[in-house]
Amino acid sequence: MDFNTFFAGVPDFRLDRRKKHRLVDILAIALLAIVSGADDFEEIEAYGKRKESFLRGLLALSNGIPSHDTFNRVFKFMDKGAFGECLYTWSRELLAFLEVNKPQFNLDGKVLRGTAKAGSKKSGICIVSAWVAEQQLVLGQETVAAKSSEKTAIPELIKSLDLRGALVSCDAAGCQVSNAALIVEGRGDYLVAIKKDQKHAYEQLCEWMEKRKQALPADEWVDFGSGRIEKRRCCVESRLELLDGLADWPNLRSLVMVESQREKNGRTTAETRFYLSSSVATPAEFNRLVRSHWSVENRLHWRLDVVFREDMSRTRQGNAPQNMATARKIALQLLAQVQDKQSMKNRRKIAGWDDQYLLEVVKGLFKCV
Image 1 (tube, one colour):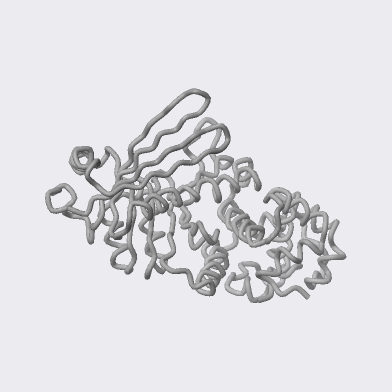
Image 2 (cartoon, helix red, strand yellow):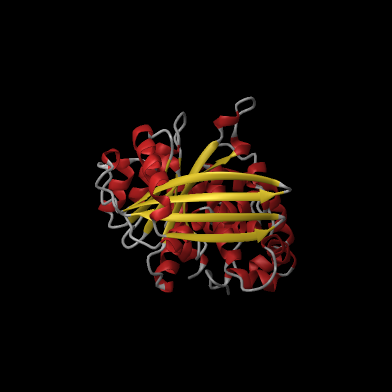
């Protein structure tokens, strides 16, 4: 597709008589600038002015490069749902093209810390994302309402996803019978972490699995790296008839127990976690699925913070924080598709230095002329 096709679903809120720049030009410049290392609207304007001759080969730019105030105003008032849909549509098309068998949708929230008010760390905007780890795709996101929590955003995100044939995994924030019911109604499977806030069910499950764990089929996994040794033992129970505390969970078929031990700098820590699932799988498969869920932290959230400096962003007004978050995720997916040995950080820098490399980065999405 081209820029016009990709951004076609984003409505232009501006009055025709006051337009100096096409909306598609503003969005395309912003995206190319973010891929190339820009982190805020001033840097986007600076990139555009220094790359104007290159950009004129791709865009109309009848009135030159927009100012940083124009970029700010467009991202502030632009429909965040419509802009986000550009990302989700592309991700769904990629997932369908790759013909992935039973993809895993990992749901998790991330706070944009730079949006928090002074003296109130918990006031920052939180966005819950649906992440497909193996293909490194964002399929959807939902902003947590003010004075609320991830628990209210997760069901709305689940409703927006096509769950047919997928496995949805989430941490304790999404451990609700109602969420499981939504996933089953969408013809998907769930894998959710259960913790002590589900008191009766958790205590019954913990007691049952501790008694039975030596007799259950199990898988052990060991990982070495960064001066640490991590061991995980996963066992699975499929006999559920004696656990009345879990009777309300729809299509519940597997109870999963993961015992992890971590050694680093001579110190050893241990943790036991429990999961509920409507899927039937081997201990080795569940061990992999549990590990895969946390890729949303180290391959999405970590990269947004470290590579794109998302937590440092001071963009706060209107829809700008959510729209910039979407633009960063589009840029991240473009950079993740590049087949070279450079780090993500280096790819951004090289794209800023080398226009031909930038075209190679975006060619997986845009037909540049």
